[in-house]
Length: 80
Image 1 (cartoon, helix red, strand yellow):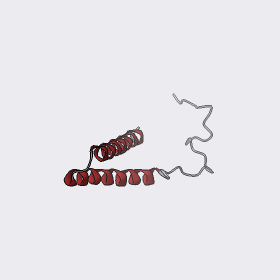
Image 2 (spheres, helix red, strand yellow; image 1 turned 30 degrees about the vertical axis):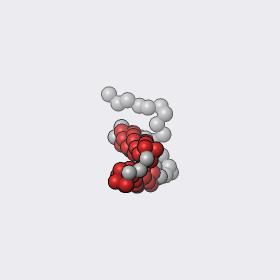
Image 3 (cartoon, one colour; image 1 turned 90 degrees about the vertical axis):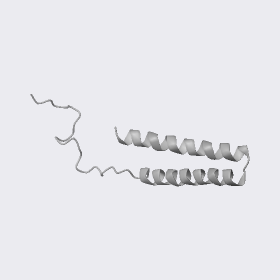
Image 4 (spheres, helix red, strand yellow; image 1 turned 45 degrees about the horizontal axis):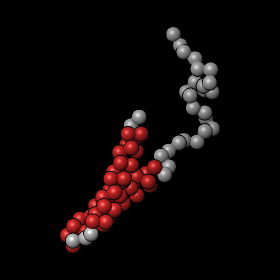
């Protein structure tokens, strides 16, 4: 049995004149998140080595957790 979709414009479901949707800025954002993640981890490590204050550790840790969470969310959304 063939199911017809009344909202589909073409049998393939894709308009011929529609541009291809690519990830666009998603790759750039992901790369920037990785860079910020690495910089924050290195900053936290350096702060530990030189005896940095608690505020430095908290700030670097918060940035690390935020970047990691955003990378995980992006990965989950891409896999859906």
